[in-house]
Image (tube, rainbow, N blue to C red):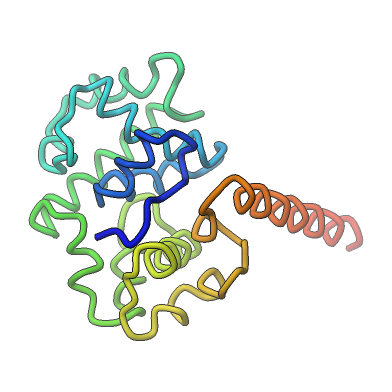
Length: 198
């Protein structure tokens, strides 16, 4: 799957898991909501450690874990998310869908896509993925992992643009992380100013 080692978690072991395990990468994307992205992308490695999960992660096994046990693993300090139990539920729903619809192989979501638009539709149908997050994930696959079905750039726009530094798709080191954070902050401030001017 990988063309390069992902650098999203800020931790070599967590990044190695994201790089080699498609389900772990999807889970990291699900958790990347209302928390710092490095916190989110460390989540899959923490799940493996806390629950004694096999690597690569097994979607069917994860879907079958007692929800209380999974929720407790997410909530145990330091918690895996700001909303640990809600996100544990979402991750378990994701695992169940992968097990059921993709024969327990998360990579089939992209290896089986007919084109970029189909890939985005498949990703957007997953629990925890809206349209924007689906576009970002398609951009991440294309820019960093070499998954580039026909039309992937259009399907991921504007996040697929070269050196756009709009999202996690552009983070390859500490400098690019800082640039993405800077641009996101600027965009938030511009949106706030626009609302105030109305």
